[in-house]
Length: 351
Image (cartoon, rainbow, N blue to C red):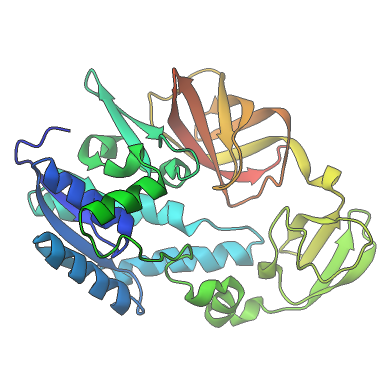
């Protein structure tokens, strides 16, 4: 990345990734300023940490209060659970807030680029920009960015895409950053103590309804206290002793029923996804890809069949826990690199 005193607005969270990203860009000659987004009422500590790192780096920090707009993300989060689906608020936040609202703010401040501490890469060639998995697969965050608009890629920088977390901390220490050993939360930012159920119950009290837990033949196995406490593929914390491993294979919001079954019933060979966003020219025919169906899942070989705003995915081998509400992300190999070519919201298993 060549500097040429181009202006960059760096999203600072107060953690090691974003602070190291800012330090790297400063070292490369960019004219940097920071921005902290207030997304919820408990952001005081993170804001103070962002202010601290901005002072260490000697850059201005803008503070952008987006709580009113972020309420849409919270509403989505709760409504998906009410529908018996498993939401992915970080994907929606990246699309609408970080690489939507925040990018527009960056442009309004005259910035050439918005930068974040995500472990992902943008590679540019012949006027095109593509989103690629990070060099270190264990830290790769490309899944969570798969739904950003393609046009965004020309205006963003991801300095951490070539590093592992260990390398980042080492680099931060060498730069004298106070964040080098800071413990970072892996929780969803607006959910206190990572207690999803309590958060949803507070915002949607009507979701707390007892219902049946059954097997796929309809035999009653027990009772639950709310469908929001379950996700497809779950096998721990079911409150049912079966003598063998059983998984959540279906959540029926209409009947308020959770269906359990052996692992074979949690395996599927296809899925249908809608609301598809492409990060390349929209394909007109089927193509081979590697497909991730959860942030932490391993990509699986598949054939992707596009059909307008939806796609059908046919896996080479059955995969476990195809979960409505999660994202299916499509990758293709380009030599040693994995390019994110698109993603869509999983609706069903296509059966």
